[in-house]
Amino acid sequence: MKIDIDLVPKDQRKEKPTDVLEVPFGTVFSDHMFSMRHDGTSWKDARIHPYSPLSLEPAALCLHYGQGIFEGLKAYRRGEKVLLFRPEMNFQRLNASAERMVMPFIDVDFALHSLKELLKIDSDWVPEVLGSSLYIRPTMIATEPKLGVRPSSEYLYYVILSPVGPYFKEGFAPVKIYVSDKYVRAVKGGTGAAKAVGNYAASLLAGTDATKVGYSQVLWLDALERKWIEEVGTMNLFVRFDDEVVTPPLSGSILPGITRASVLTLVKDYGLTPKERMVSIDEVIEGISSGKVKEIFGCGTAAIIAPVGSLWYKGIPYEVSNGQTGELTQKLFDDLIGIQSGEREDPHGWVVPVE
Ligand SMILES: *Cc1c(COP(=O)(O)O)cnc(C)c1O
Image (cartoon, rainbow, N blue to C red):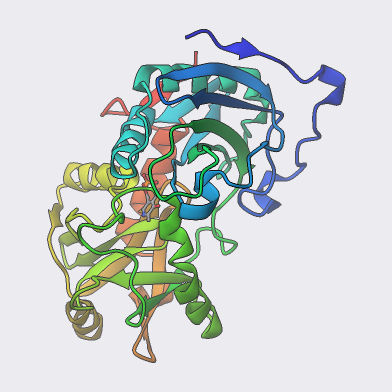
């Protein structure tokens, strides 16, 4: 499919943030966006055009029943080059989410090609400083105006770009995590493994409980027994018990993170034993008390690696790694950001240049 291009005149382009590290995550957008629409038969009208408000019918299905999915990935600058990290996996996962939400598939090669074209046009929006990147948000929404509950016959797919610094305002400092035993995020058979918009709306109330006691993120337990740890807000979770590095298995209620998959590979490279197995919250709490839990960290595209400094469970705060960043956590952060930004060797061929 040919991509039509409509550029913002050079003298009307936006001013870029002077210090991207100070910009709150996801609040500034580049000059252009990509979009295409699906009419029930095929994708058409592929365009790169000025970033601008959408025109939607008030009856558009996504606004009423949440038929919407998204992705998140980043572009890094290495001198003149712009680099992506395992981007095909994002578009494959978008299709997996689409399947769950009865939405049309996109062609992975075309999605990557159109993203590269957009990035070439807005390449000067990819920031340079260490710890910054251009966050990419592919989105697909149901646009048919109809109040009946059924899959839409029309869709919009678009991609917007946002220059970002660290995800948490703490930067790479240990985050405090609140274990929710009152609300749940996902249940097997539900939509937890899809990056579906409704999952996040359902998570907000638990987040406000966490904020009340000074915690920033929620750790979800399984919905049935409220016993097994699942994942954190926008991150998968790892616990290091001595030399065993554990993350919960992808059992259908957990988002299959690309960072999670990369961490599993890196941990093996380090000669440690990564394990995907069920971990109960009691095992974590006991391990913190006995010293068996050496470190806990979250991982996801936005935060990359986030050390966990404390857990709040049933009204009691537990300090993890003395509130410091663990050794493995630090190494994974340095290696991942090094590979993503092209500063370190990329032994697994994860980095894709935009060219
Ligand atoms: C996106 C996301 C993750 C992390 O996935 P990455 O591919 O590593 O960015 C983890 N959990 C949830 C709920 C997410 O939405």
